[in-house]
Image 1 (cartoon, rainbow, N blue to C red):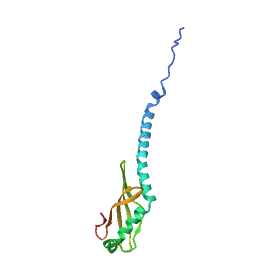
Image 2 (image 1 turned 90 degrees about the vertical axis):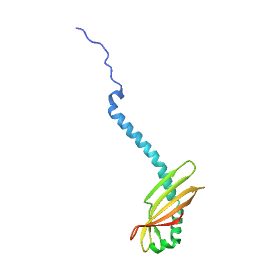
Image 3 (image 1 turned 45 degrees about the vertical axis):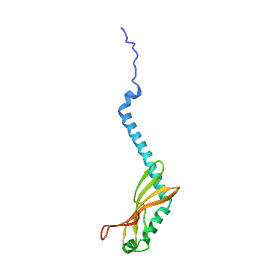
Image 4 (image 1 turned 180 degrees about the vertical axis):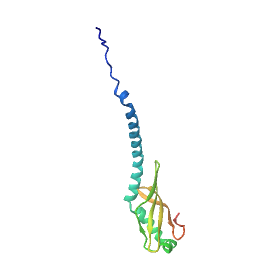
Amino acid sequence: MSYNNELITKKPWLHRNWKWFVPTALIIVCFTLFIMAAGDFINAMGTAMADPELIDKAREEAEENKEVTTYFGSPLQIGNIIDGDVLIDDKAKTIRITVPLKGNKGSGKIDIYAHLAEEKWQHDSIDVRLKKPENRTFKVLR
């Protein structure tokens, strides 16, 4: 009787488990890249929210506009930030946010475009939008 004494070799771990390891690794890499990209957006939005002067100054500018106070009334109240884009380049941070605006006569939205210069927000433009009874946009600051 003869025995076959060849060594039984076991396949490497990656050979045995590649079918679940590769898709899982790709998902983790994609998720990590998404979190890194979202971090810049969240940081810039947090900077804007931490500086209430950005929104308060825009509200004050809107209250000084006669057309806005005619349609919205006075005083104007600002809601929470509902929409925003953050554009970041090497030298400057630019932000566009849309915030609900309400007066005693009506409500709408205020669009604020600003850039960060020397640790202070500088407004580039402020637009106030009215939807009811008609679609109308007031250019507060250009």
